[in-house]
Structure formats: C-alpha cells, structure tokens
Length: 115
Picture 1 (cartoon, rainbow, N blue to C red):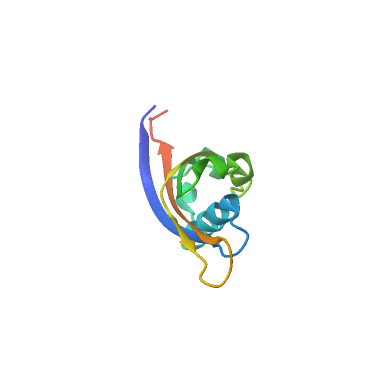
Picture 2: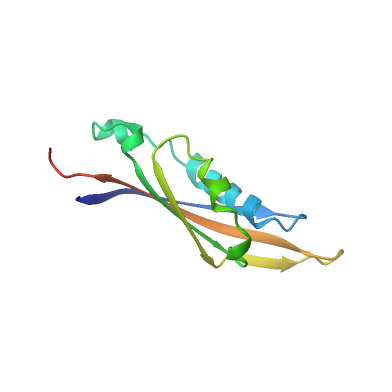
C-alpha cells in the first residue's frame, strides 16, 4: 500500500460546564471537519469510503474519551482515532470544576498504489 496524505485539518472543542472529555473531543473533530468540504475522494477518482482517516485528539484526560462514540461522527471513510495527553483544563473561577478544551487533527490519506 502506498498511503499518501492529501489533507490535514485542525479543530478545537470545549465542554464548558460538564467536564465531558468525549464531548469536547467530539466538538473538536466537528470543528475540524466543518472547516472544509472534504471532497478529496472525488478529486482523485476514489469513493468516499476509500478515505483513510487518522484523527488525533489531545485532551488533559485521554482515558475519559469514548473513541467508539467519536467514530460515529465520520459519515464515511475508514477512521482511526488516537487520544493523547494535551488540550487544557481551565479552572472555573465562580464554581467548582473546570472547562475542558480538546484539540483535534484530522489527516486524510488514500492508497495511491496503481491498480
């Protein structure tokens, strides 16, 4: 397989009050997706199902992110999602708890091996 990267997009998402790391990650992925109409498949003559999607999430508590829930965001393609420590937790000044900030990078590739 000759995996060739054709697109990288970035996003940020938050959970302001619930401290929900999956929700912040979900919003970060959607933010990245909504920056672009990802029509790369058509440009290269591929099916949308052929898109190899590598998504990386950064948040303060990676173990609290439900990756299976995040995969439901992608309507097509072959998503692989990894979560690592990153993002930010910001203490709330007027209440208990904190705001969660997650960052996302979406990398779209295709198998460019000639048939």
